[in-house]
Length: 100
Image 1 (cartoon, rainbow, N blue to C red):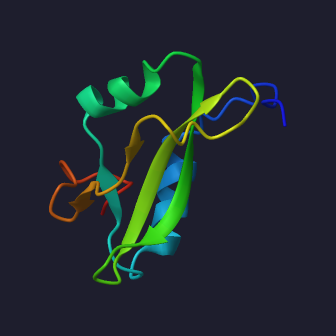
Image 2: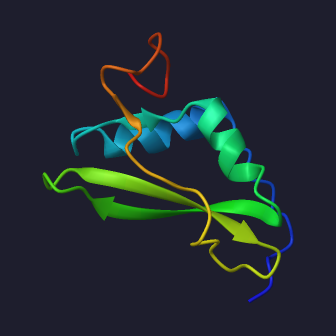
Image 3: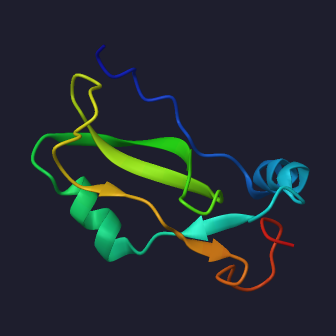
């Protein structure tokens, strides 16, 4: 399937904060992926985007799997795949509407 037209993924902070507050109490609030590793994923030849999958690690904790996506919308499974974000907490940054 070809990639969809850009939809504008940007949202205002107040809307993002409302969404994250609704999910608090379900475990980790979020996670941190470092730019160096994201750049490596995005710099793959033919990478047009990033797809995420929800998973469970070997300890039964939630995980987020990131994979590059090519122009046809296909996962680049022979390339860089990522998981194991630094969890929030404790890697939440300063208090703000997203993590408080």
